[in-house]
Image (tube, rainbow, N blue to C red; front, top):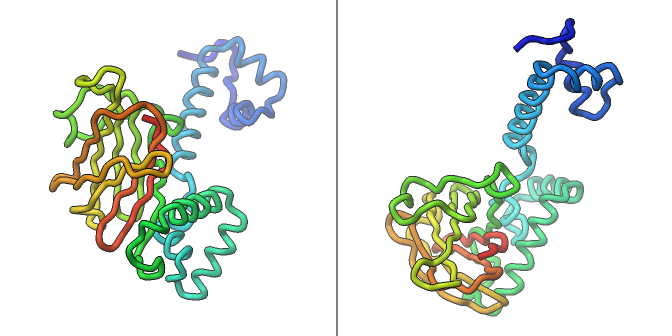
Length: 238
């Protein structure tokens, strides 16, 4: 496909259009020329892909934020993270979320908070709103069909894949399926909470899989724990 009104628009022209700052001649040209309009569409896709890859690239890791919260960091690193959080709404929200989780579970902790090695809040890496729906990890492919809602979270060296489906054995109910990878959370336990009450606790199997069937639709909180780490996922709508 070639430009119908040469000369074709430059990349600078297309970028100005995508930024909403294009001159009238550029806007008019794009309205008439399918070739240049297609170039603009491809360029927007590249911009979005780069934005996804660079999302929070300068932010401290979930592990560092967790260690900062419970006072395990050296003074200089703690101060750098404090300064970053004061100007970063994403990290501020993550710290607030972690504080809320730990405060809500305070009565259930068997050891003082300062003795916990790591307390992390998982970040959504891919899922609705960050790249659309996903295909589930191959390790779970034999257990399910196409997922209705799929999410991938990261925390420390762990990656958590969550999929929510209709439960084929219980009409009107849901099933939550998970796959966990990462040495820190290997052989861990999954705790599912709702409305401040623990719904179930189950062991993550040797392949990193776990499933919770027969769930009523609604919001849930998932916590994964191992001897040296506790990972809190953002609220999940089931």
